[in-house]
Image (cartoon, rainbow, N blue to C red; front, side, top):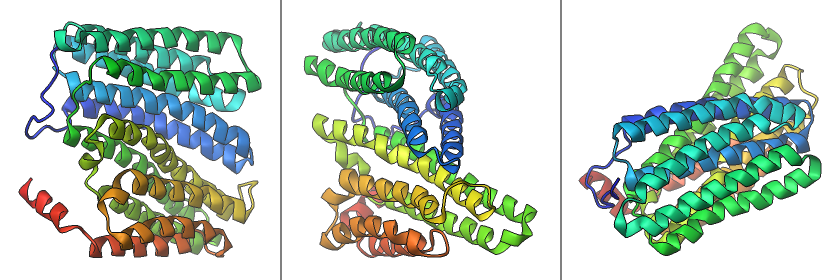
Length: 380
């Protein structure tokens, strides 16, 4: 398992990587559904906390596989088999999301997570056969394996507030493994490939919002009394989702990971971008419940379940990918737009102001598209 050339031409996501992403569609969807249920029942703190913990497991496992694949994917039978094992772990994790939300029981989530990570350890051991990156690969394998023991002990011994505190500590330990391992030698990453993979996962998460838009139409068919508001929120959700897509894919993401430090910031900051995109779909479902009088949340609180994730998503993309490659007008319009959507709860019709603001932001981006980016897109 030799390192791949980071300058390899025409490198794109493989069919195996796309297949791998399918199980994360399941996990993300279940997490968003459970967050929706928690929010609509007015269990705000517990719901958001459970979502944050569960989403960390989803995000970190996906990200680790993705960065390993960009460096070492040789697509032989064993690599494929170990990837399928990781997929099995994701499905186990997905099965444990509901108990994690309802009973704060993370045993099944941890079991699925450990299955994924053990398969990842095996991949790193294979990569250690490469002489130039032997120390790095073994550092990854040792670090990941050690943390999995700690996760198992966490699931068996702790609960309540102590469990949350120790979770944060262990999450920090997990995220420190790459920082320590890469000191022994930096693994090669393909900028276009890795950013394409992040873009594909973003599409998966935005797809959950499109599902929420469709659900609004379905509810409208069955509830004529709320027909106009439900159709309106469906249309507005599509507009906002398309705007988020436009904003995310406007900047040249591959330029944001030229150095190791930048790649760490880019990768880790995506936790907030991804989690916000998933939470946005849950917020739309909460708004639908409010319109059909099935929610314990008030109108203002329900609107914040939509606007806060949007603001986090837009600010996150601006910070890691747009800010360094945009002019002053864009660097004012994008963060200002993210902040303005937080005023949406004062508008009687849900997410109306948000949709207008997002359209304006997109219009600014279209008008201020850098010429060198357009040239690069034409030449590639």
